Length: 303
Image (cartoon, rainbow, N blue to C red):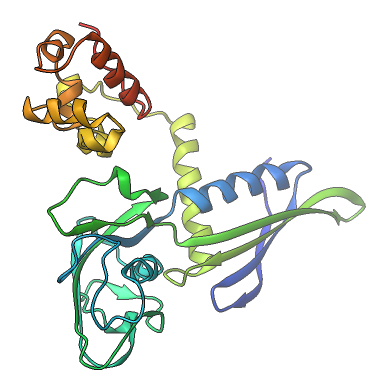
């Protein structure tokens, strides 16, 4: 028997939506509600600032003359800027402010395919005569991307933690309801809060489409083509980490860098015997390297 139920938007205010799915067969309220909540929180595409370069600043703990807030506070505020961006490639945006007073997200200069969802967000405050010039990279993605997993950029480029998810919060509750004389049907109540880059209704529809695509592979499976090892795109973000970023002792990291094994990708691509031959390294150092890689979910080849 095909499921027949209604989806009713009971409330819509700002970035909040309350939906009811009714009537659902007994038990399906929790089944559908749990699945939708997981997808809503983890799998919807969004955009965020992933790195920033500030004129005259080398790292996040620096200070900028005339900026009333710390650079760290400014970076934290940049993480809160929300973007509508449907592209796949990273895009550059800029900020140039030299008037005393508040600097807001609306002051960011963005390309035509990027829109700021919260332009009134205050980024920092400038004193008279101060000047702030910055260039940022906006990327699209899903979930959360910590700064330490980002590719190491040029000197002066500060990586930021990026929260891509357009959904900020989801609640679901199941109540009993009746259809005629049958009283054990479910009513699923979904509350969705978004960041303003999409409506709660759009978020719900996208989450359902993602679930549908997975179930479709079960019902009508498509053949999965075998991918050859040399066609795999490295280790992803982890492979781009430098040896200094995986927690190795300074002596070991310096020795590896001088020998040309300066990233995780290069380390994993080397033979153990090659690493042993590196000056100032020995078997104990190789064990330390293997342990550091394992902490990042990567195995050092035994051969």
